[in-house]
Amino acid sequence: MGRPPSDWRRFAAEIGAASLHCDHRRLDARWTARLRESGLPVLAYTVNERRRAERLLGWGVAAVITDRPEALAGVTGMAK
Image (cartoon, rainbow, N blue to C red; front, side, top):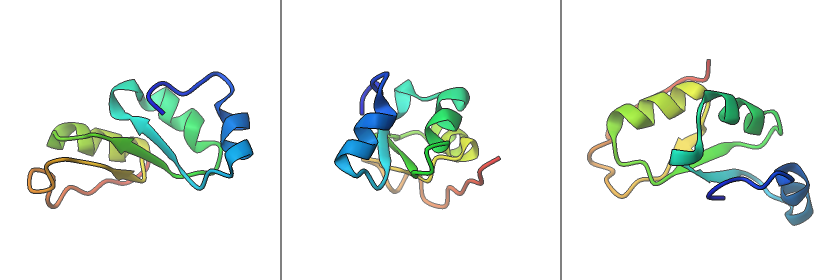
């Protein structure tokens, strides 16, 4: 989802989503928390900056998708 639709919960349930993949530029701590309330893992794409990856993982994003794996090597995060 680039920008999650207002009815994202219904949409996720309708398609039997196993996770939510979102454009990282559309995520902030509050939005990430709301998405995580669904119980589905939240993944963020396309994250190519180390600091951004660390911030997203700190918010509870389950994984980041990147074009530059070498730049993010060793990045770890823990949901707060």
